[in-house]
Amino acid sequence: MDAATLDAEVAELRAAAHAYHSRYETIPNLAWPEGMRVAVNFTLDFDAMLLRRLKNEPPMQLAKGEFGGRVGIWRAVELFSRLGVKATIFTVGRICELYPDALRHVLAEGHEIADHMWEHHVPKDPAMEDDHFMKTIAAFRHTLDYRTVGSRSRHSNSLLVREGFIYNSHGSADHGPHYIHDGAGNTVLNLPFHYAIDDAMFYSANWQGSPLIANRFSDTDRVEEMWWHGFRQQYRRGGYLNVCLHPFVSGRAQRIDMLDRLVRRMQTLPGVWFPTSAELARHVITTRPPQGGR
Image 1 (tube, rainbow, N blue to C red):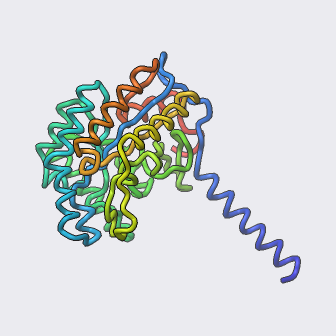
Image 2 (cartoon, helix red, strand yellow; image 1 turned 90 degrees about the horizontal axis):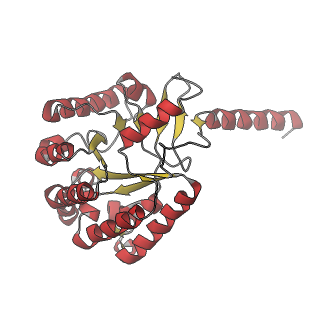
Image 3 (tube, one colour; image 1 turned 60 degrees about the vertical axis):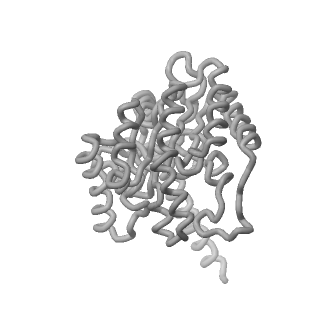
């Protein structure tokens, strides 16, 4: 390869890297409401057996998912309401057909419901993606008389902005809230989470078809200490933590007890803010609006 060709390829790679980097707008020195030192979102992915069906998993996996709708979500809502924590439940649109009473209870207790796709996947075809997205919005409206402003999905920024959504909670490009621009003038705040603070990574057998040798049944005390130290690290920084849970996973009795202990430990420290994802997003957007895009 001659020098001119190499220089051209390097320039092309640099341009691509710059374009990718420009999609992300970090928010340094983000301040929380007066008196608050750290923000903690407790978020639950309420998809019951729908992801299990999508992955064509065996009946026992479907039964585990069903437990989330029949028992787990109720236990989680009771826990967070009792401890004064406002949670965000990211739910699949079709859950409105399967467990409407559970979702009504979530709202009655003052928690947030947000989009988690229609059937737990985003179609590649733009028209089909639009159809799925609007089905979820319609299901929330007809079943719950509710309009959400947030998502946990790979839905395009253009769709989210078009329908008035203000945040997504997907991916982990930064420790804290940050903006994502799509290059076409559509900007959405992202509230990141990471699989290190995700219950499915520690308590799952045959997760998404994984072999039995990959079973991950961690002791709840071990998980509590890992998450506690993750929280303390963000507390020292004055940062942000997004705890990702699943009702069919953490709804089991000993795991609910662990969450009870963990939240109570967090509450022993001054200045810990437990907003819904929408409350946190509105604070960020109001105090530190994006510098580019809309």
